[in-house]
Image 1 (spheres, rainbow, N blue to C red):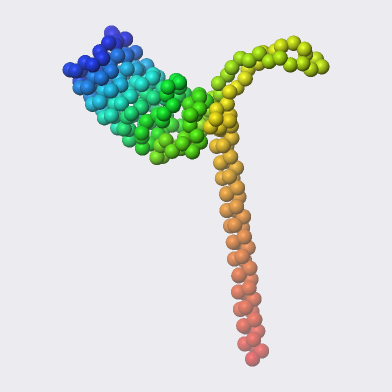
Image 2: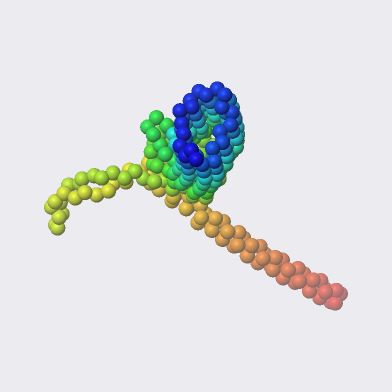
Amino acid sequence: ELQECGGFDGCENLKVLNLPKLKWCDGFVGCQSLTKIDLPSLMEVGGFSNCSNLQDLHLPNLMKLVNNAFESCISLKIVNLQKVTEMSVRCFGGCRLDGLILPNLKSILYNQSSTEKICNIEEFVVNKLQVDSRVFSCIEPKQLFGMFKSIRLDQITCQAVLHNITQYYKDDFISDQEEYIHEETCKFCNGEIQLCFEQLRPMSVIIKSTKTQFKQIKQINLQKDLILEKGNVINQIQNKLNS
């Protein structure tokens, strides 16, 4: 019935962690013999960094990956966490993953010291990705898509940081101070990252339209060729009759 646990940092003899009722855990840093984690009820995880022999994760109900959760777990290859919606930007830092599959990921959490890429992986699979604008504060646009060898995204939403700012201004009707919400846009997209991707849709429409026009032109040309061919046949018959 244990639902929370921790305090096992550096445990040399722990090989498999199997606690069916556990919902939260931390404090397994540097457990070098740990090879498998089987925690079917776990909702939030952290503190497994530097478990260098960890290969197998069975976390079917995991919702949140906190900071440095599996950092430098170099034996992890494929991570498939279907229910994770929130992760730290460095929770897989230093890993050598071949695949990271997070189909319900909505938010990547950021802290001031974590501006590196998420991890060195071959494949990053998400459907819709929502990130804090500060994630891109130290990343140039060309570096974003250089992070991974292949990226498959249906949608990226860059969430601006909101600040309460007191503004003083005067006009014909108002001569008092007014507080308003200011959105701090990120350097990468200037608050317009969705526009960048939405521009692909009209492009595809233009391409489709162009193909249609080309097809129509091709049909017209074929009709011209047939008419010319028929005309040549008629001329040949008339010439034979006249001769």
